[in-house]
Image 1 (cartoon, rainbow, N blue to C red):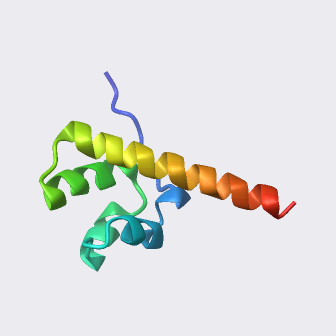
Image 2 (tube, helix red, strand yellow):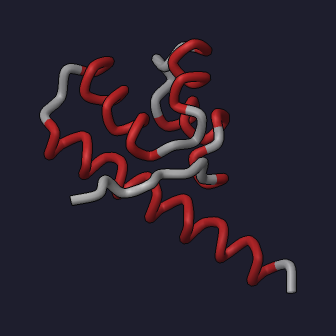
Length: 77
């Protein structure tokens, strides 16, 4: 079975990640590089949370950020 490819996601910018998880240092943010799989693993390592909790936090973050982005685009039209 092939592993899914993860590419950098503008939703996962360093500033947005730093706002959500302020304890992330520059080196960690560089390693994450906008990739959700790397952010997921960083959350587990940095905060010592379960895989399920990391997945939930990541899902909530992406969902909230995408919603906020779509509202910004709608208001600019």
